[in-house]
Length: 149
Figure 1 (spheres, rainbow, N blue to C red):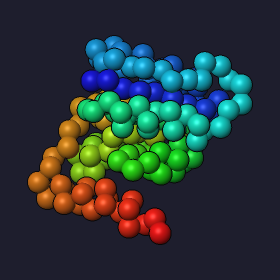
Figure 2 (figure 1 turned 120 degrees about the vertical axis):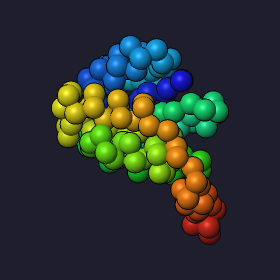
Figure 3 (figure 1 turned 135 degrees about the vertical axis):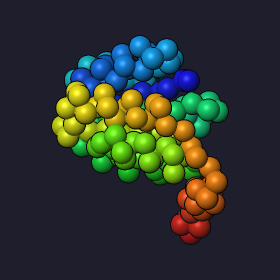
């Protein structure tokens, strides 16, 4: 699986940790920055990751900021992105199984390393269940156009 990862200055430490976790599982992880703790704006990195996820079919995205909220809000502005802010394993699993989320958002100031590892492990193992969830995901996808007037 190909993952694109990005953060802001408040998520850079967890970004390195998550990248290592996914690479250890044999995934390709493309780091879209930043590379230091200089102040940056999270919408810029959400945009970088989401554009790559949309351009690379079957890929997934990982976004990290202090709370995960700003990244989640920014990512969900992109048509075709279903970003889920996850603070525990259950939310990560359900985001993939029921909502076919293609981007996971994490908060470095919210979740410790052990929880982050459990979250990304649950995210990585889960797959979209389809079935009754397909219609709901399609409704999510169709909301974008109907909300723009």
